[in-house]
Image 1 (cartoon, rainbow, N blue to C red):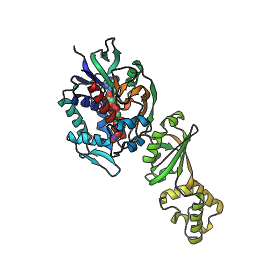
Image 2: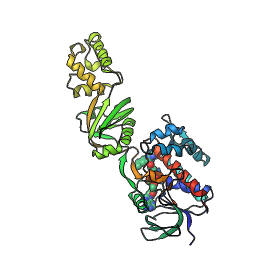
Image 3: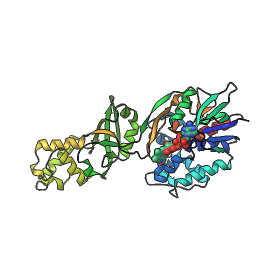
Length: 410
Ligand SMILES: Cc1cc2nc3c(=O)[nH]c(=O)nc-3n(C[C@H](O)[C@H](O)[C@H](O)COP(=O)(O)OP(=O)(O)OC[C@H]3O[C@@H](n4cnc5c(N)ncnc54)[C@H](O)[C@@H]3O)c2cc1C
């Protein structure tokens, strides 16, 4: 049996993009090997069933800022195939997309099935073979430079080139390791924070814009500004999800136990003192509960904070003691919460960690250790924050790998 020109291990976003790009650029014999019975299952469930395909952050320098791991190497990739290219790529294939206010890109139909159909049809129209229930167990490179690929049932496929697009699945990491690669230990990214802080659930559903939050771990400080959502178990929202991604490794090393600092105000101590003294002087007869020093604090949150620092919410501003004023100021500037673990679910759960990116040539996504072996998608130690950036990396790395395979001699 003639070897395939390319065997793609993993029928997800990255694998399909690789196979289609290679096929559209002249690679003849391509096979996708998918371990389960379902193709592109993560696309189906993504974005709450809508699939957040990418993010309308068109400039590569800005796009790259959304990846806590991947850094400068991704910039080179995005300079070749970025969010705008992905947008065009899908639209040219008949999938209409829309950009939402927060720049997330979705199919116009709001249905992830349309993304799946588009990818499946594109692959089939180029005669890409697809084998499901072929869980790749072992890969051997022979002395004549072809790969023998064995399934869990000992079925065999032979290919001149192989791409691992196995997502965060441990089997893909093991296959890469057996072919000589180092794996950066996978840890979760993009999660919410749980706290046992009593009464916080009274603020459940409160959302505040542009809040600075901070974590100090292992002598490092991690900060982020964004919208904060209070849930019945703790904290969520874009500010938290991004901070969880930025500090994913350090938080993991502390077993998800750490202090979260919330800065409810960007004003200085003196500025807040002036504001509160103004209330004491001019609204002396008003209860604390009825006049908040910062309009962005909702009433529920303001009551919660006063209770937290044991100040009577019914007190009149004129009766506020100097030490109570200072307590309020310190809380608004730096409010501490003991985080006891991850929240029950992530919005966009991804794995941080995977194949060490220093062992991969990002111009081609080919292994620097094992020629003929390529990587695309989440199998690599690259991950983005929520907003479509994780799929963007799959499309970019898949496209680069597909192009690189098409430039090899077949
Ligand atoms: C609930 C949820 C929602 C998400 N929403 C979004 C979103 O809206 N936007 C966004 O950008 N990102 C989102 N993500 C992240 C995104 O889904 C992933 O980053 C992306 O799917 C990774 O694609 P991939 O092709 O690298 O891997 P995967 O999609 O995981 O595909 C890998 C494939 O390889 C197969 N496989 C694994 N091992 C083997 C093996 N040994 N042999 C054969 N096959 C194998 C798997 O069965 C799988 O089909 C979401 C994630 C989750 C969990």
